[in-house]
Length: 60
Image (cartoon, rainbow, N blue to C red; front, side, top):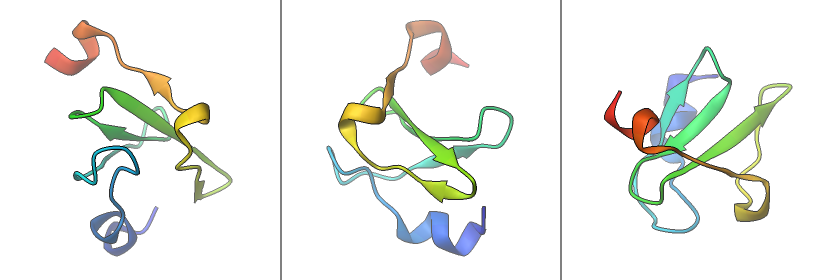
């Protein structure tokens, strides 16, 4: 993903920043404890499509 695009995107739940996890192809919102998938280079910023982060993932 383009880093300039990531800087413009925010979490739809908290309006906070997102971090890109290149290995998992996800945009991570630590404040919402959610990971949004990136499919074919397109971020899917729907709460219903997001995965809940575990405590271990948040500590990493």
